[in-house]
Structure formats: C-alpha cells, structure tokens
Image (cartoon, rainbow, N blue to C red; front, side, top):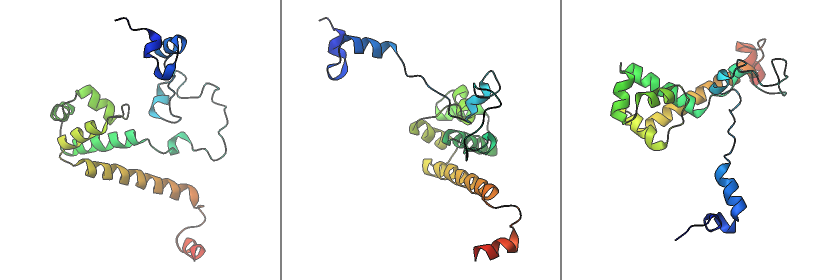
Amino acid sequence: MEVRPQQIGARGQGRETYARGMSEHPRLRAIPGGLDESARPNGGQSPSGPGERRPAGARKPADREPLWREALGEQLRALRLEQGEKLTETAGRAGISPQYLSEVERGRKEPSSEMIAALAGALGISLGGLTLQVAQELRRRQLASFARTSVPQRYSGQALLSLAA
C-alpha cells in the first residue's frame, strides 16, 4: 500500500503543508542571559552591539535569575563532589554517559524527570530531596538578589527597622 503525504498530514492538511512541515524546523533561540550566550562569537553581546540599551527594569546579566537546569546542575555537582566521586562513577551508577552528566552539571542539558531521578538515586538522595535542595537554592538566590536591589544603602540596621514600623 502506498502512503501519500496528504494521508499522513494532520487534520486534513494537504500535501503542501505536510511537505513544508517535514522540511522546516522551528528556529530555537538562546534565552537572554543564559550560559549559551557566552559562546557567541562577539562575547555574549547582542547582535546590535555593546552600546545597546537595556529596557527599564531589566537585570544585568550577572543579576539574572538562574535557570532551573543551571541550579540543578550545580546541585548535582556539589553532591557528587561532597561524596568524593568522579564523574564516571556517578554516571555509571545512573546509567548515563560521563559526557552527558558533565553537560547536565554545567547547565547545558535539561534532563528528563526519569534522568534526574536516576542521578538522584546514584547520589543517594531522593528525587523529592534533590528537588527541594534546588528549589531552596533558587529561593536563597532570589532573596539575596532582592535584598541587594530593593534596600538603599543608606537604610540599614536600626534605620531600616524604624522604616518598617
């Protein structure tokens, strides 16, 4: 039996739509401030150059909120190093390649929940425990960032308490 493109297209899409859908892929874009920006040829600068102005209220790259995959990777690496393990040992127990674990630890890959559970198990922690640690670290960073940006330097200590009252 011959399969024709119009038979395969979703919800009555014709041959043109099917052919276009199979040959075109969505263009992926880097998240602003993400780790991937450092790999740009112009040193992480946006295409319009270093003189570009940020919108009001935009964070500096150093102050940006970390991505979940970055915080997860940092937590996994910290747990592995606390236990004095090599990348290959942890990766072997989790059933993944050392290269993949390295990319996860550097925040380059976003592992599935099954993969995170395998890594957590290999490090002797539950999936819930690991998730909680990552969430607490993200919250700590958020609070530290808020404290740095929301309280003027002139208000501190007793003066700050009197303002709050």
